[in-house]
Amino acid sequence: MSQPKFQPSTPELHYRPSHRDGQSDEEIKELILSDRPVTSAKNVWAFWDSGWDGMKPWRQRNIIDWARRLDSSWEIRLIDTIPRSPRHFLKFLSPEVLPAALVENRLDEEARNSAEHASDMVRLPLLYNMDVGECISFEHYIEHGSELRDSLEAEAQLPSKLPISAIRPAVTDLVSSGFFLLQDLDDICWDAINDPNDPHEFCAAFLQINSGLPMFANGFLACLPGNQFVKHWNSVFLELWKDRTSCVGLRNHPLLDGLPRMDLPDEFKVGLGTTMSPDSINDYVAHIITMTRLISIVDPESGFSGPKYFNTRCRLFRLPSLYPMHEVFLGKEGFSEQRQFEIFQLPRLTNSIEPEQVAAKRFIEGTLTGGILKKLSHGTSTVGCAASYLDEVVDADVRPGTWGEYFRWATVHLVYPHIPEPVIPGGLELARIEQAKVMGIIEEVDFEIAKVIRVD
Image 1 (cartoon, rainbow, N blue to C red):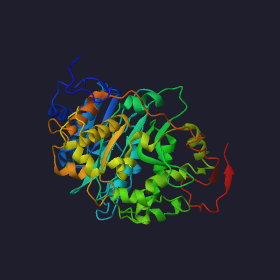
Image 2: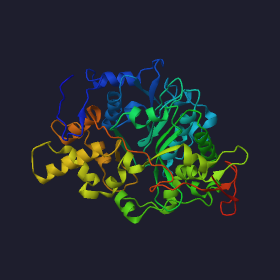
Image 3: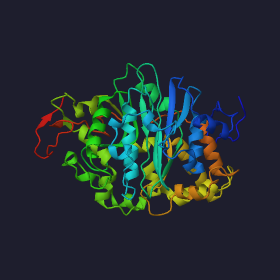
Image 4: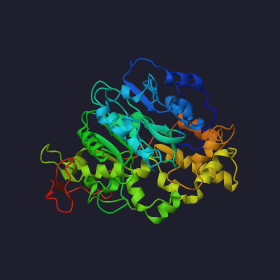
């Protein structure tokens, strides 16, 4: 075993060499960008519409480190939307499953949050697509013009039952985000969903900002290709975008009429630094509200029961157990976005008792042992954040001798042996859904007057 560059700062973390330790970043980049045939069972497809050169260096390092973190059974690939590119995403998806505004490049560049929805448009078809093969979907970044849009999809293929996982950070003209992978895809969801004896076939993180129905955080989704829930979800989302070029007003679509709205607490808005109105927020999360429709209805024509699917087929995690973004946004324990960036630049002095070193160690250790992903996000922030600082100080995450260098190394080489436990509907943390509205998948019926039935 090769000698580690660093010693873990806590005994809970175990060193594991990467199978790519002998390769340079440039060599891994060339592999990611290569137009090679698909010959293995597991492939991670990175979708970057403007290509590799449009990304900030720290984001490029994230993708390279995914290749270093994952074992040799995984490959990382890059697809894009560059005209005549051999990696264009329409080589993998049929235009019929995508909104015309995306296919025809007519998304309104000026409309707030259009980038997030462009990401959502690609995600669900990739999750469902039977032609691409069984796959795991990892994160997307979509960059459009001079503004970075997040949206990376990754796919992985297996010959039999197989999960697809989607990890997507949302962005707008003001937003960008990046993920550091802290656990292995096999451990996160692949092994569990790929088990033929496991009844669950869809994996997601959920949040419950309002009372009543939970909402899936669409930053993490996992399922088999051909999953009917994903197919129905995309059908509704396609209908929302019919004859549209902007996400503005999606909240008012008849298919979403009467559904719960997301009302962020004031302290959450302050933590995000957002000035978005409630209407803008609900345009922003229209994709999530669309999912909430599905778990609320029984379709008499197809027989699809959203509540039954939610109660018996969904393997769910509390959102903070996947990536503790809420605590980060709210700046709890003094770890504001600016403070996180400052910690990255601090010299790493593990034996120091200076308050700033003690705080840095607590933050880095807590991140490495506290979730599956580390998200550096612009969110909807109008104030400084770690991601924007890293955009400007391009080596802050790799500067020799710093906590930032250690953290990036740790995301590749350190293993935390504890994966968060899923939450079962019907337990203390998450109630079962016991009634449903009777209506078609894309039938425009007022939720307030629709027939209600109980669900076993």
